[in-house]
Length: 130
Image (cartoon, rainbow, N blue to C red; front, side, top):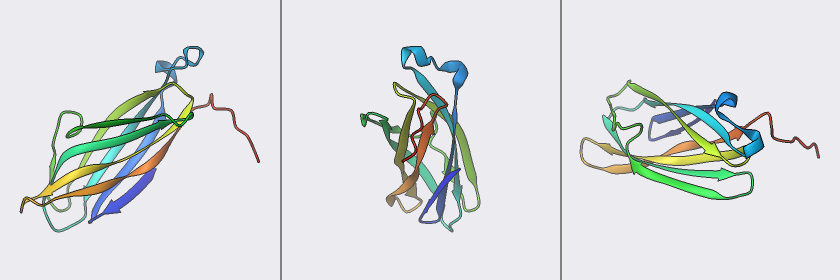
C-alpha cells in the first residue's frame, strides 16, 4: 500500500494487476487501484477535481484531469473516509501513477493534496538485477 498525507488528509492506494483483462501478446496490460481518502483533520472538505499522471515503462506520460472521482465529489467531515476503485490500461507491462486531488473547505479555500506515486507491476515485466 502507498500512502501520503497533506493537510491532515491521508490518501492510500493499493494497485492490483488484472491478468484476466490483460493481453500481453497485444501489449495490453490493465490494473485496478483502490483508493481510500481519510480526513484526519478538523475541517470538512470536498474533493472537487482530480489530476493523474500515468507513465508507462517507455516514459510516455498521459495526464488525466476532471471533476471528482468515479462520478462523485465526496464531502468528508472530520474522521470520515471515502473509498473507490478505478483502473487504467497501459501498453507496457509496468508503469507508475501519481497525482493530486483539488479539495475545497467550507470557507471556499481550495488546495491540492498529494496522491502518492505508486508502481504498476505485472508478472510480464522482465526483471533485471544490477
